[in-house]
Amino acid sequence: MRTLIYIFSFFCCVMSFGQNMTGFENANALYNEGNYTEAIEQYQRILDTDVHSAELYFNLANAHYKLNHIAPSIYYYEKALLLDPNDKDIQNNLAYARNMTIDAIEIIPEVGFTRLLNNATNTLSYDNWAILAVCLVVVFVVLFLSYYFSRSSAKKRFAFIISGLCILLAMISVAFAFHRYELTVKDQPAIVFAQEAQIKTEPNLRSIEAFKLHEGTKVQVLDTMNNWKKIELSDGKTGWIMKEDLKMLKNF
Image (tube, rainbow, N blue to C red; front, side):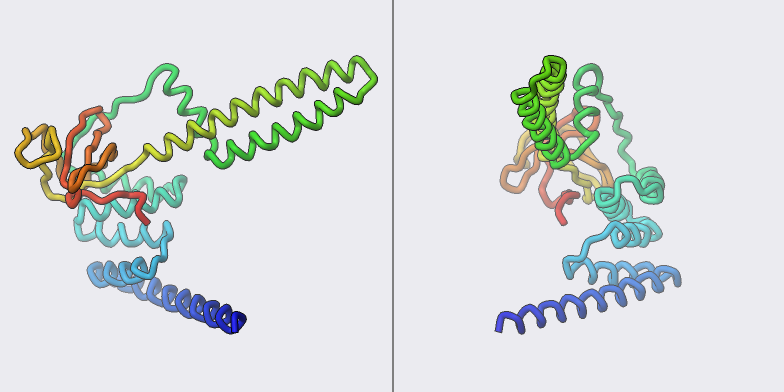
């Protein structure tokens, strides 16, 4: 009985994949014919089946861009970039889409030790840092055993120095892994979808307006309280925005 269930599940997956491929080709054909609204609807149907890919988001963003939909085009380009960070076409089209936004927000660069630390941490994912730490510990164990059982003083000295270096690098790798994980968790980007959103100083409608934002602006979400989200801009400004006025980028 269980075998039949597996076979049925596999058959359903194959059928779903085939339907999505056909739908994707149809959507691309509609896009090439200039039927951008119909193409968007077709791409969206594929997304509704819980299928996610950089190519799908990229094509969906292109269709929105053709219709001058500022927030959706930036939103889907950004999602495509999350799945394929090194794609030059996505990066270039995203830059064009950002030119349609109203808000000109200065980016404050990181400086000093914080910049060096984050740059070093971001060279690997936290999984890869953890794997590196495990590998270094294994090398340490092998070298320590070599040191313990070796009769040559020169070999003992070499094994002791290199094993000590390995355990030190392993501890550094673990520290980088934790730091990278913290950076990943804190990184909660979102795109403003409201044509004009009032950013409040506190999470209620009676509070003072801090500033306004317009559709397509990218923000970082710091906190959530009821129907409000605390956001931070690239220039360091913070405030509270209604939850329905933006969409989180990492929600797949």
